[in-house]
Image 1 (cartoon, rainbow, N blue to C red):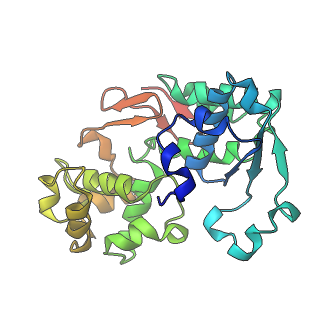
Image 2: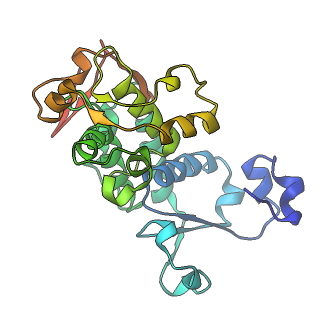
Length: 266
């Protein structure tokens, strides 16, 4: 991020301290689940800063921010209404953030059936997040399964899997997270994917440059096991260790919460 000169001396300040010198604070959020998580975290945090809440206004976009035509931003008031932050928004955000940080996903699964109208983009985001829990049929989240579908259709390059979000149809993970998911599919004891560059096994996870190059030179295909998982004939998690976080829930092979039509306990 490039900071304007006037802000460079303030970029390391805590958010509340950064904002306190301004008369009005306007924040924009789109429906992307990452934006919605930031929104509920921020409102939960600002609930203890009443002096800032009086200045705060929200703009809640109905589509991805990057899809908004730049010439319309200057006349935003005409088509993106300003939302004041009231007790309803704060209560909904607090409830949602606590549910997401809970040690099990049960509260989030219950939350989608409650009144979330104060934050209208939140329910779809929560449903997208829940679909990333392992499936009862395949042991994979929806993005992992979508990777297998795309590879089976001939998309053998990682760029298509990582960056063509409209083709992929899921919107939770960026390139770094997607790379780790793909590596889990390809480098476990029983791989579902072949052709992922083997050097990724030894390149540090924080070495994004070298990992990016290794992903680019990969040529992907499904293994026979991967085809069986895609056909719902095998469960990936039966043969490969699971160890990752979903919000405050630690998913492991022996503590695997699953989500299909309903949430299934381990």
